[in-house]
Image 1 (cartoon, rainbow, N blue to C red):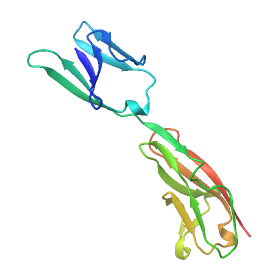
Image 2 (image 1 turned 135 degrees about the vertical axis):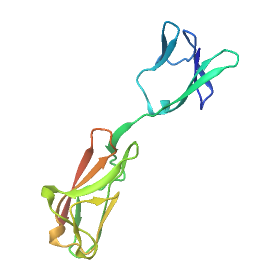
Image 3 (image 1 turned 45 degrees about the vertical axis):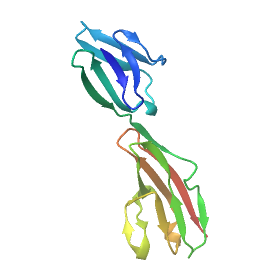
Image 4 (image 1 turned 90 degrees about the vertical axis):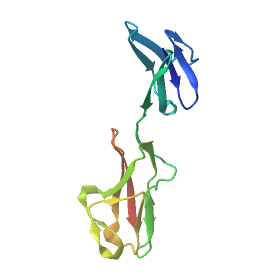
Length: 165
């Protein structure tokens, strides 16, 4: 029995011997009937297809895909900081996040205040990495929350203060 990493064509284990140079890889079996590949301290680079191969004639194999999920993280670079804007001007708040699967960005206001978007339309939340506010009024002032979620806990948020002069 051998375990292989398909995309790199790397042999990880043969029988009970670990071939991989990585100390994170191990192999166990139960009565030489069921074989288990172990990878400790998983990393995103471990994502991919793995194959268990039985060297019979004909050779038998089984494929499995290892997906790695990563909780969301809001990036300082590419995300707005507190802003001061003149009344009547326009402002574009941005929120950048990483994670796997790629996070969804939701904007909300503190204390459940509505967000006024184009043409005076008010919403309780807005989806997307950019929140554009044109013709800023004093009603737009306050705290905006950029919330990043991808189904992998925890959901994270950043508070951005908008001051209107």
